[in-house]
Structures are given as C-alpha cells and as structure tokens.
Length: 195
Image 1: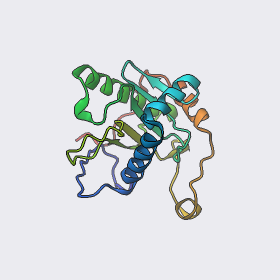
Image 2 (image 1 turned 180 degrees about the vertical axis):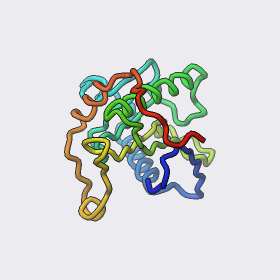
Image 3 (image 1 turned 90 degrees about the horizontal axis):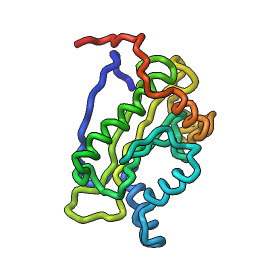
C-alpha cells in the first residue's frame, strides 16, 4: 500500500474518539441491539452458517467469510463463534484457534494466485472507555487489493471514492475461489526481503 518494498508490519492505534468505520459499526450494533435485543454479528453469523455460500473456512471458535457487503473483491470477515466483545475475552484455547483461522485464511490468499498475497487486516473490538459494550462482537476485517490475478490490483478511485464502490465478482464467487484455494501452503515463492 505505497511501500517501496513489500513487508509485513503491525500497527496499534489508540484514539481519543472512535474512527469513522468503527463509529459506523458501533451505531449499527447499538441500533440493532435496541431493536432486536440481540447481537447483529451473532445473528449475521447464524444466517451465514445456514446458507454456507459465503463461508471460506472455520474452526471450533472462528469463521472466515466473504460478507455480502464486501467492497474489495476478496474481502473477508473473521468472526468469533462465541459472543465476545474484545480480544481480552478470549480463552487460551480461543487464542490458539484465532491463530489457526488466520493461518487458514492467509494460506488461501497466497494460494489463490500463487503469490504472497498482500492485504490490510485489522481487529475491531469494543471501545476502551471502561463501559461493557455488549453490542460489540469481536471480529477482524481483511482488505486485499488483488482483483483478478496477481498483477491486477484494485484501487479506490473516481466513482468508487465519490459515489459507490464497485466489485466485479459476487461474495459467493469470491468465497468459493478462496475455499478452493485450500489450506496447503503454496511454497514456490521466496520472500524478496530477507532481513
């Protein structure tokens, strides 16, 4: 994403106020809980579990799926199966299973076009204002920029930035391609930066 050399890195952000995407999520989560007396993402996961078409992979504690509202072609959402609001609610077994689902998913990304697949990923969890926030459901978003091949990237420009994002494949098609990518890691590539 603008780096001159592909490299893995992590950032931890702490803001005084919720960022736009998290604030929008929180408003939706609060409104849904008030209307239905249940968790929006728990109910969404029940729907996806029944339909199965957009689920990529899962284990005992987590599901990776392509949400029907995905903007990026191979965008995924990782949801905890148990309702928990933040990472510090995870049991030690769930911590291991979180690592497992992240590995399953990123292997599928690498296998999809047989390249080290670039992506931005982030966890969303309850705000840290010492309130319980039962409306929140711990989850992660993956936003990978590759479109049809290892050489075709998606960039938000023009109409997508100013009006509405466009995607040229369905969520179900993206999930099927990621499922078919399997969980045996593509190993013919070598990292370009060995530091």
